[in-house]
Length: 271
Image (cartoon, rainbow, N blue to C red; front, side, top):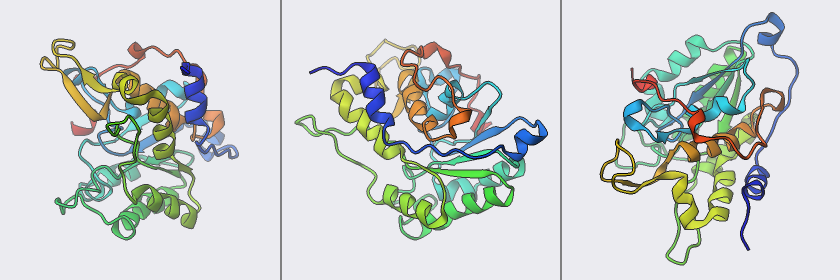
């Protein structure tokens, strides 16, 4: 039996957590509310030299109301540790204010045991670093939301999918419960979407390109971690499902075109 796009979206969005709350201090004063993104390459904004590669943070604005601003600080190669150690968290905390939202999504690079600059242990240092983001946002009367890592494209030879992030998603879920922090379970919702799509259809979401298909990738690409525009949009949809409901728009529209995305001349997080 084939599944249409609307059915897939309903299945994937079913596990997302939405949290409503009262008027924020920013809205009460008329200040424009901002969603800040702290994350890694799966969320980052890419440049014209990277087209069609895109991150979900680059597409998030599509699903938010026009009066909302997205500041995507996600940095390729970053872990919860290296992002903070490089001063990137400090930059966010210098800009964030009452009523703003901070989305925090790491793990891909925290998992790199061979790299002491990035590796964190899921039940100790990973949670310790994540607390810096939560405490920093709350000290500035902003609202932190933990986002479990988006799943990679992982299928066995028989076509069955499998999870790739080990204990990191469970660690984030436990921290969210312990600190009473809203959680968007992107690991679960993306895994549901990739499972429903299967090995072949997921290639249209991830950065799978034939040789000569895109000028920036003359030799093609077979990337099971990063997205092209279509995938970035659909993952952003899953993330937006957990943003407070009255900040969202277009969430149920299944036909958002890939060309809604734009690519700046340089990667903003790296400039």
